[in-house]
Length: 449
Image (cartoon, rainbow, N blue to C red):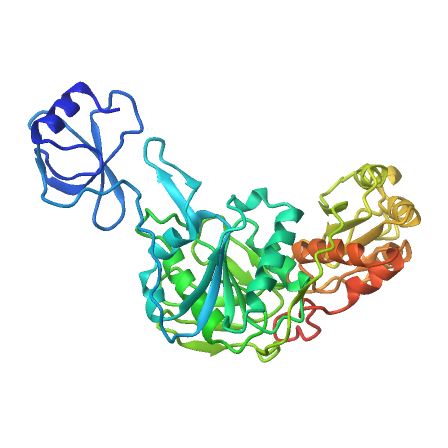
């Protein structure tokens, strides 16, 4: 709420929130849309400038206001857009929330997931010249950190329904970026017989900001879905800090590597599938991929929820693993050190002062003996784990742990849960875990290591 002095000045010129005004201060003038004040009794006017950024300007002695003859706008409003019919390639959109679909509450400065699919399209009017929207659906709207397995199942079923429409060349899934790479992996494993492109896309910056990246991300995702030759799930996000191109990262080999940078996503242990430009140019970068086809898509959404991802740390107690066994977990992915190391005390010829109770080998043997699948990946991310290089690695393998080569920890978690859901027993689950379902394993890392 603005102060009494500010409110009287606004009343004098007949202006209120959403109107365009010009503020003349003793030093310079500012022009923008008047936004609500996030503070009580504030003498600082908050304006949204033409460049999309907000500025707070003190209404000090000698300041004056002018109301501009511009149509009033609801702060943060984006029009709902329905693209006209065209002969462009047809795609469908699944809107699930995330920053790309947020609305700004200017009274608090926070954002929340509120936009309908038509409003998401309103951020990117260029889509009308690129593709034809066959269908838009929103099975749920939430922040991606709140995703649960039932959301993934619902999303996979909706995606399959849309993909099996003959007029749909591909689909775009709008999603929060925090767990976007988990969902890209899930869809890669749950969508069986996939032959059309699925672009999972988000934004690091909200639509009210001048640095909003969702506009170009969405446009590039539409080109991936409608024009590319890939029959795979990909995360399509900014490839650099500028608005020049996006990368299409394979859904099983991508990870979010920065909390807020626009080019936050990177392919790990693999090259991106393609570089996509906002003018529609697609440059393939990876020769190893599933090509587009019209195959029928089915869904295998079985997912063992009693699966965990456990990050190792120095002095980590094996009681953590025992706890999961006691709670009935059927599988765990150990995000271990480097080549797959866990605390064992067996790395050298001298034991020194290692506390034997901290060795993970007995706990792994107990877990495997209880029917749990213990998978090993590396928190180093790049490269692969190995069961043979060091003696303690051989001991871990001998205890029954399954080494997952170059699999990303997040991908390993999702895949192990899917494998446990589909397999009849731990041995069958381990065998499925080591199969290559969606190019999640890359045995040719020489150029990347």
